[in-house]
Length: 383
Ligand code: ATP
Ligand code: MG
Image 1 (tube, rainbow, N blue to C red):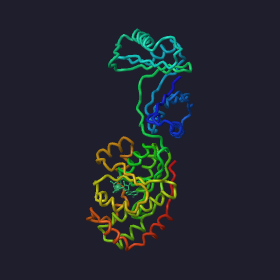
Image 2 (image 1 turned 60 degrees about the horizontal axis):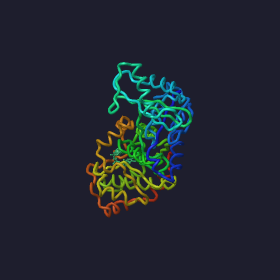
Image 3 (image 1 turned 180 degrees about the vertical axis):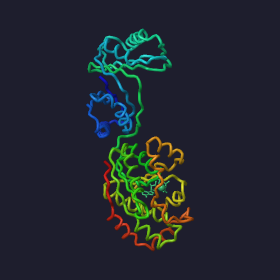
Image 4 (image 1 turned 60 degrees about the vertical axis):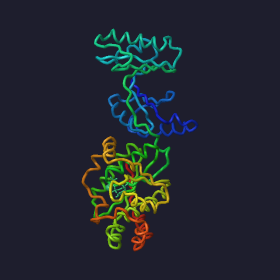
């Protein structure tokens, strides 16, 4: 019978908290596999999937390998622990050509042959069956693994597929992530989910200056990121009133800085309303005018909770590589306008002084603008 063996990472380092991390991982795996009919089991420090439709194996693997906390997985043949059954499975799984070796792990010490002896025996059988193969114990092209479990069953498998590692989502606290339609913020979400954070997103939208497609693009990005965060809710906040007020009352070169401060204030409020302890952004130091140390200082000055910027030390190219890997890139580059692109100053201040920013901003009724925006939130649960 086909089985999928799931091995987990870092979690086993967590000593007394081990059970907490394990149950989070199990629950996340079940969430990720919700759409499949299968049976979920445990085997020592592994999980095993059984009784699934074999034709769906690639899709199941794709779901499992993207669950944070999964170290690796293997598609195995699970057979009774007898020499005949193991031999048959090994021959069926053997490569067609090239060099190979057999590697045995014998958890069940009642099995009559020692690991080395069984490997040699099965290796001989495989070789006898296909003379195009050669044995190479030190640097083989292929490995046939035999794992004899204590329950009278043995797994025989070839490849080890790498998982994404990281910590199970839900074990690292909760945060509100600021999600634009760009390349960076979805990657930032991925990075924090990887460390076990549960995330929800906030998006600022300036209808009618920004279109319905621009908003849909962000919801599409959120749906892709959900593959990793497992759950996703997006608070879409109307930013039009705030942007119009800044445009009318503040010098244009401060537009972006002041917008950012409003975004941060609202994100923090949403964090508190939703029991989140941090805000996440996709900022990367020096990438644009709003991401200099001075700009970040101005934005950060209004925040009273931790702000995580997982991309702060990344080059654009490195961020793009991750965006490709996680599948957000193609959506991110669709050419819809972002609210940051309207009323854009020709020459934004790149090194705003906080005192100057505060002075400029005092022309606005900050509290009322923030309250109004919070009354205009559309909460979208991504299914
Ligand atoms: P991104 O690729 O994520 O859009 P960027 O390089 O375009 O980033 P900025 O536009 O300066 O950089 O945005 C910096 C960060 O501010 C974004 O990564 C995101 O976290 C947040 N942000 C910007 N615009 C919005 C928006 N409309 N809604 C929500 N968050 C936003
Ligand atoms: Mg952007």
